[in-house]
Amino acid sequence: MRARSLTPPLPSRQSWWLEEAQRSRPDALEPPLQGRLEVDLAIVGGGYTGLWTALALRERDPALGIALLEAREIGDGPSGRNGGFLHGYWSSLPTLRRVLGDGAALQLAHASSRIVPGVGAFLQQRGEDVWLRRGGLLKVAATAAEDDALRRSLEAARALGVEEEALELTPDELRRRIDSPRFRGGVFYRDGAAVQPARLALALKRAARDAGVQLFERTPVRHVRPGELESVSGSVRAAELILALNAWGTGWPLDRRQTTFGSAVVLTEPVPELLEQIGWTGGEAITDGRMFLHYFRTTPDGRVLMGSGSGRLAFGGRVGAEVLDDVAAEARAHAGLRTLLPALADARIDARWCGPIDVSADRLPRFGTVPGTRIHYGAGYSGNGVGPSWLGGQILASLALDSRDEWSTLPLVERPARRLPPEPFRYIGGRLVRWGTLSLEEAIGAGRRPSAAARAAAALPRLLRMPIGVR
Image (cartoon, rainbow, N blue to C red; front, side, top):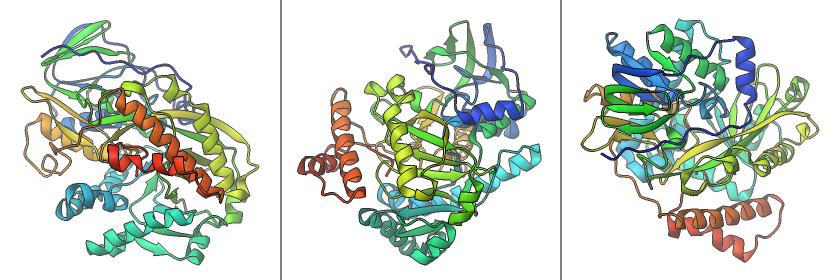
């Protein structure tokens, strides 16, 4: 197999999450790899997927020699930049049915019910505080155009006989959870929690180190060959290799299976009195029904994080400044805060940052093994990776151990996946569709009639089969 170069993450602003986690519990960086190393199994990527995989492997076979290589520092990538929404796939039933069929949709959704309890048990056993709060997941509609997203969620739950997993909220019931004049209705999912994502990443790092996993930070991998990894300062030989690259796996091994775009967040000053005023005290993690959705949650000290999944696409899936420092997307997140939660419109913004999202053509991750090798991979979480990465760790551990079990037979494994158009058509088409969809959603949100050009461009995904947004 021809060696492939893997581009490491580029410098960008650190997230507030990681700064807070490091202040709360300082932890020295692990040294970079130096020289040659031989182990049973090597993992590329120190995010949630790589760390959960390492822990699952050590639990199943404590004698395994495992090395994990992270290009920068653990917690500085998407695992320390996301919104901290911890949930499974009950809120994705419409997508699961369309992509997998009813039987497989239920199989995956039921398996994902083990995520929040599994993470909770890990934290309790380790005595780690990552601000875990089981407040459920709430999907709201802020415009008439978003009502359809709620309707599809309720219809899917009814069709599969699991109405209890998607509870419709009337406007009055919704106001009792969060009072905003913009919200028309909502769907509540009990399968939902929130965490401080960088605290979780560093908790996993400590657990992996304590379990005997050899961790190497600031060790970008330059080449991958069957049985061998090469970094800038050393190499690792291992019979089993796992690529837990996510957004940096867009080029390989998931060429044309996923694309990469950015997401941006803003974080307010503590405003607990305003949260009391609007009744948002239950800890619900919330999304709206837009294609480029807003996602928002609270913190224990009364801050509000508002995110906008409207960042720019990356040409060829590369993660560069256009993804990691998207000022316009940060401004859209701030505008979303003022629009959706007008009671918080004057709250000071204390921090803002961006991060990449690996989006598959059908919005679901894919796990598998490169044919003819023992190189295993998983990526394509499409904006929902905090919880499903726990599943991903179980799946990749089973693939590496060649175990045919409840994890390796989940419908995310070795499934057919639609290919995306080649570059430059993917980038050009994606930019056009993104412009049209953003223009359409912003016009509807402002009560204006969208232009004909915006409506036409927004309709292109059905023709081009382009994954724009995470819905």
